[in-house]
Image 1 (spheres, one colour):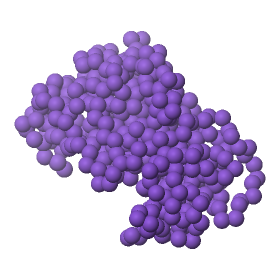
Image 2: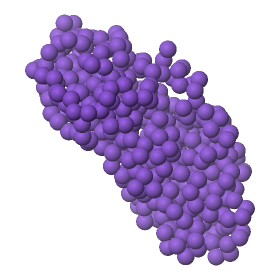
Image 3: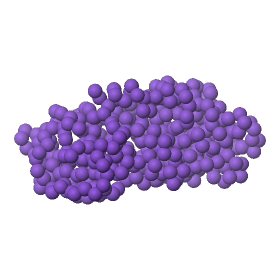
Image 4: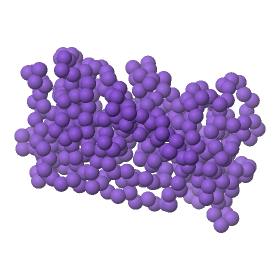
Length: 442
């Protein structure tokens, strides 16, 4: 049974709710490629607004429709006006994926949340590199290794009969394990594999593998990472490499006010999307709409090394605002015209310049019925003065959008530079419909 099949039976999700802020291309575009290949997530578009000059860095195309901006909260006359105009151009599809090497289907083993090996002092076996701190960075050369593992369950037709190097990884809790290869000289072709627990590495317990990168949600205890040499026509392409290992647990950012349960949902959603080929990026943005907008509730994590890249405030749609206090969001939608925000897993696409909102970032929803309309609804990430920290501090909350995730103008450029082009964004709220229907919750 595949991981996707097993997990789908256990999953529970829900509706999301968004609003319009941009024109765009089809929302639910999933390019599945082998981990390590480039993913083209769509060409940028340009918009113009005659009421406001374009950003000087990128000229605005006056033929494109005006980018909708976000309205004033009717309960706050001092909120800055952000009046949208509905996009009029037809949906423009994103560029197709053009893989540069054949795809090898990954058939991961079923995830286990319970520890399978006790954590404690363990003797490191001869010929094995033992890792118990993260991030880990090291160099190796498979030419110096033994040749004991030839084929792996997650890619059974790939010949890995060349020599391999083995790493025993001790995980203090359940979490997301990431392995990355780099620095391969010309002619070297080695692959990285993550194997679930056992007293010795077992190729039949392959959780994930890739030519450059691998990632999997793993239980606490011992896991194995194997760097193995690809073999073709009897020739082993062994050689030197650099390996980095990252590990992120659900509780790692509680000191930064990111709830552990929310992060666990996001990490598991990332793991499923990774297995489906929905991303090749390790930057994960988590938005917790259950928090009041006076608080920072957007975090961006680099899962490759477990570092926190951004922590900032973010707005929600006026249609999502609670009637008694607009700083709280309480309802969400995937329907055009609701001016509500959407929940669930989305993927960043291309940047563009809006005449009214400046630098903006398109999004594609990955969940049918939950957020797959974010493109047609023109839901994007942009900035505005009503999302500045100074505004939130003086008004006791953020201003309201028409469903877009709006951030401080001082943060938009570094944020877009970091996450554009295929990184995942996960928006959470304990909405019953979302929990019941999302295929990324388990």
